[in-house]
Length: 125
Image: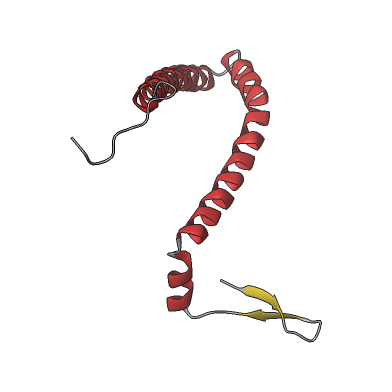
């Protein structure tokens, strides 16, 4: 890990902390959050690039199904069926997860509900 900082004289300085200092710094919750956010951003960009090529890849696979070579046709058919099954599974899991999250959010809202004007009792019974 390299750190860049101003040297106090108007210049930019580069330094490398010890591994122990770097690990200690990355153990802080705010550093972990920044690292997770940066990782998520990189992953999102990669997914966007792949999503942009998905249509072209599907067209290529479709074209290979019409190949003169039966071996190529067989491999393309296997791949199309495998990918189709994986996509179906991913979509089903995503739908089920969304339903569970919605139920969980409803449950949390129900637990947090307090009628107006009702003040919770303090430690007295």
